[in-house]
Image 1: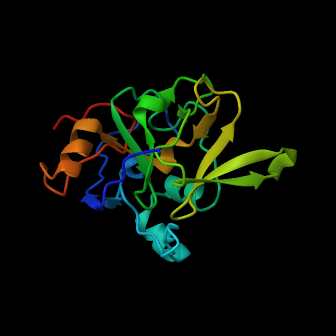
Image 2: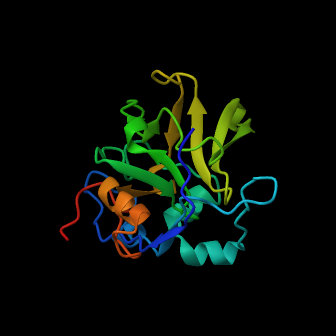
Length: 206
């Protein structure tokens, strides 16, 4: 489905963006990202399966913000219209905020009108895992990161063509990397440490 890149690129994912007044779901400290390794070609075992990332609850708490931990590790959901990246229209890729695995391309992002960032396809077939979710008296398909098991959101069969799918994601389960920076890292034309946005998708002053 995609071209695989035989490398793992590291970058410093730091927010530095304040929460918007109308999105008062997280304070400035919770907006701030921690250092994260952007994983383009994940490690695989002899059968070609992704090698899982396993950490204790204490290790995840030390790495993630409170909101990221609640969503990724406790299967929480951010309130509609409050998460980061809802209105982000910049060109780039979205990675798992837990382990850095690239998950979605901005070319597949669309306005679903639901209040959560939505995509109609994944960046690679096996980077997002589907699980049956029967919680709250509903039958849904949960999406988790196939590398670290972090909760991302749910997928629904009411998306646009060509897939007809709507991957309805929590913004706080993702980290955004601009296309220019992403491609520069892949080609080796940029330093390993590059700032990516972990806020609401607005451009950085730098």
